[in-house]
Length: 135
Image (cartoon, rainbow, N blue to C red; front, side, top):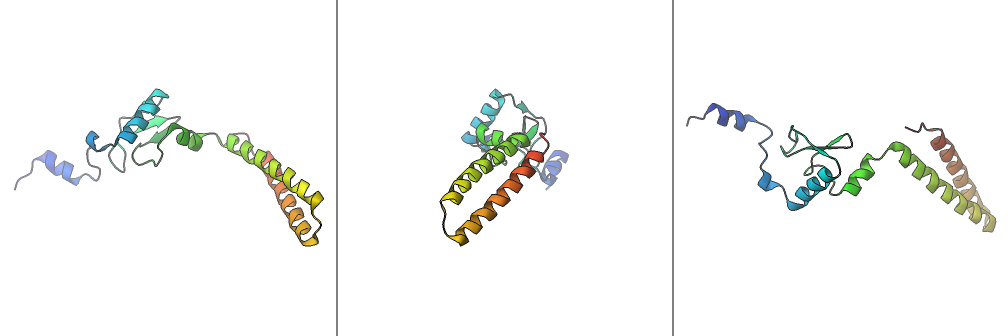
């Protein structure tokens, strides 16, 4: 059987041409939401599935292969490192306050040692996090 040049070319592709009918409704909705929030539709297809790609906040995303299904999930993944560091510092300080309160109430020497070790590690962690560059 003779194949046309195009048929041979397409059969040798590792990425098959994208078929819009294979995209599920959730992925379609995700693409629409991304576009409404400023994403750009890219010309290049997804290297894994051949599907459409969008660029959102500087990150190229395939709505099918990304494993992300909402803008909120994506924003959590693309938020600046400084925001994550600030959250870690706040959580560590809250835990430090909690441990300090426990330290005043605890009578068992073994538990006091564990609490003191935890406080020491938290203060070291907070110091390291506060030294991190803001960007």
